[in-house]
Image (cartoon, rainbow, N blue to C red; front, top):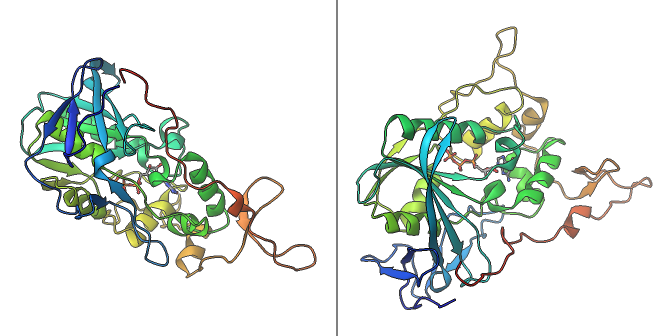
Length: 332
Ligand SMILES: Nc1nc2c(ncn2[C@@H]2O[C@H](COP(=O)(O)OP(=O)(O)OP(=O)(O)O)[C@@H](O)[C@H]2O)c(=O)[nH]1
């Protein structure tokens, strides 16, 4: 596979899947890009406030593969497939752009940047609002085109599916969605959005209105140079007993603009809080030790039978892995 020139720091590679990639040079340099050719992206600080994730822009490749029409239960969409690499083509993820109408060269296009949630979108999990947000965004752009949903393979806010399951396991013992990540030694959020910038640049989209409740996502995308002219809220009204704590944590700990609209009411008409959430909100700190119990769940370590502290079994988990392990093949 021929390599694109690496001198262009901000680039979008288009077009035919099997032909030589065409490199589009961009007019601007992303605001957050440093002299060392790296850019700090939307990664929230860990407990110690030091965690950031750096992308080497010279190694970022976003390649358009193909477009098709996709009939769905929400209507017919244009579906574009891409391959995206942040390590010069060694590993890829496969972002998709789900589009309605002629978005090319438009301004103020409503855009949802949506990260994968296998548990809700495939398994129908009730623990979050991700699947509903995806549906909401697709219906939104279908009823009011043009619009785009960019779907990224960044499960669990970037920590990956297995780690997210470990985080869920910890949440069973009372930690909220933020503290569970931290207890695993993982960042709150390690998603990266260079593909979004490149996909939109490839489509000639000049400015967007971001469909989100997350101000940090807006800031992260702006730092990459995106022109965001507005925000469209993406609030799922019907919270349930399983996700109300998660939604509260998103609002109180990750600054999501949910305006309390997710409030879950029990059958008696009283607002309810799951015990786990109450514990976490009551100031439960980072647990010193973790263990995996007999049922295979990650839990707080109370010490072994003799009361000696047990080393956290979860530390033997592998570090965060790239989402996609397959190597680049000739022709994409
Ligand atoms: N680590 C972790 N990830 C989760 C959890 N619940 C959902 N996710 C992931 O969270 C991601 C979605 O992020 P959210 O924080 O819900 O929302 P957002 O994308 O930042 O903001 P919006 O644009 O408003 O939706 C998806 O990748 C889900 O897989 C959880 O408890 N722990």
